[in-house]
Image (cartoon, rainbow, N blue to C red; front, side, top):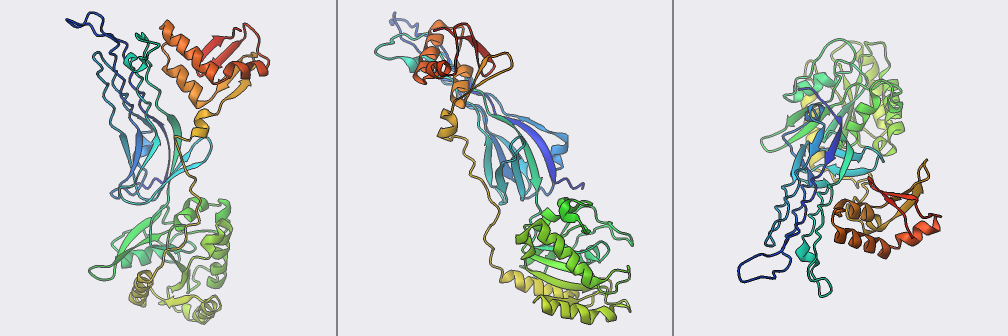
Amino acid sequence: MQFIDRAKIFVKAGNGGNGKSAFRHEKYIPKGGPSGGDGGRGADIVFVVDSNLNTLLNFRFKRKFIGENGGNGDIKDQFGKSAEPLEIHVPPGTMIFDAESGEKLADLVSEGQREILARGGRGGRGNARFKSAARRAPTFAELGAPGESRELLLELKLLADVGLVGFPSVGKSSLISVVSAAKPEIADYHFTTLTPVLGVVQTDYEKSSVWADIPGLIEGAADGAGLGHDFLRHIERTKLILHLVDASGIEGRDPVEDFHAINRELKKYSEHLATRTQILVANKIDLPTASENLPRLEKLAAEHDLKFFAISAATLEGVEDLKNYVASWLDQYVPEEIHEETPIFNLDSKEDIEAISITRNDAGDFIVSGKSVEKLVAMTNFDNEEGVRRFQQILRKKNLDSLLRERGIKDGMTVWIGDRGFVFSD
């Protein structure tokens, strides 16, 4: 399966159904009152964590998600049907960002976790809802409110217990292939692994852990060299890092310097990541030249207070001991305090709804922006005279006339609210 860990999509929640303007016309009720029902709510866009998924590949082929509109209200106070939420399934570890602002909106990690990322518009109220002592026979009804729409960036960070890091060709793919059922491509050239590989490592009938073979890092990875950022972020959620070095030095590299180089990249990318528990694993000890470097690597591990294992993924020497130690370490693992900031995402923030701003465009027109006034425009039926009067009354209550005068508006100037223009008149 192709591994896709980033996607950009567009979501649009359903519009609310329109309210109905109607009056009772029944036998024996010659002067029936208003009986128009409300419209139904539009579909919310809901993201759901599905552990059967492990990639964002589906979003390569479908990038637009539109929720159903609510049903329209009807006569005899009948309400329109609300639309069912549109569920979008994503793998565990998916983070969702607003494409325009970059704000993190959701961090989806647990099976079944649900987050609403765009709310459906509420249904417009029927004319029966506007009956009062002063207004006995209202003729107007509201249109349904538009559903929210936005562009979203999806980013997947692997949820693995153990992350394998190290330079290319140190044997990470070979190790994960012998401790799990994962079958990554293995060859004698650099960058055989171009996408992360997950393997489930079984230690007994009841216990298992997930190991991630992170593609080989290179110097400059934290600055984006190679595919550095693409790889480094997959290490962020691992509990434990297995830092593999090539003890044989057969590639002409110094394993001690490689250890320092990789840790410099981890620290540059994230100070918190650099403090993650590491185990230093010297691989390829079956090769003759490994004996020259093993004492240096043991000393290096002692200097940094790291657990040290010397193994050969080719002959399996030391592999079982490493696997069992990792299992016992994970048994005693206490979750770290989460350092990632997850902004509180409140779709119904009163402050956002009430805020009104006034700007000018190049033509000198006044642009009025704000959730409440834009929603009012969208839900007003301007073909109904009584509905228009109500619209004007609400704008006066919001003090919009005074705000526009303070900004220097004159008779005959154009005011835009949403996609509709109005001529100002005192």
